[in-house]
Length: 247
Ligand code: MG
Image 1 (tube, rainbow, N blue to C red):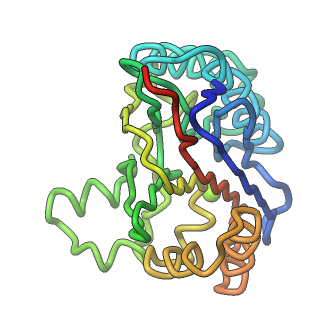
Image 2: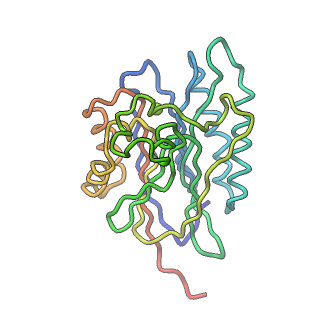
């Protein structure tokens, strides 16, 4: 949605890296900022992520609620499940992102997630991951089976436990509603960013570059320089609250 009280400035960058094609898809219009990381044989991953993003972009209309978000994610899941299977794996995709909405007349971020792409919020120059990864490794860390510091190098770190499409009949998205604070910087990205770069490194780049486009470009460059081989997609969204008229 376009909330007149909030001014958004957006940067977006993506790279194929060492993969034959870029299977990430991205949406950055009308107050919705979404990233999907597709998987499947041949061109199926690209089609899956694009299909999911097309459906999820419905959240850019009006002032979506948490229930709207859950419903649209289920619709996206059904659309990806309906794609032809081809010869390889069933096409599937992660999806995450943030949508500007309002709740009780307060501007809010609506955050959605399925899979291991991530949405972060930087407030007061401190970066915090809003979403929880739906991955085997994240579950092992949460259960105390492996220490968090081993997660980044774990061989099964890319195995997702929830996805749109894929093997599962249903999908349970995570959704959050957070009031917009002046100066909020939201980061939406695929695992091509967070695999090679630590949160501390990502935070440092975000602090170093005021302009969101420059920040997005520098993050993608840093992921590639750190040896990132996977498709990498980064969206940086800055929010400024305009002084509202007294109600
Ligand atoms: Mg990926």
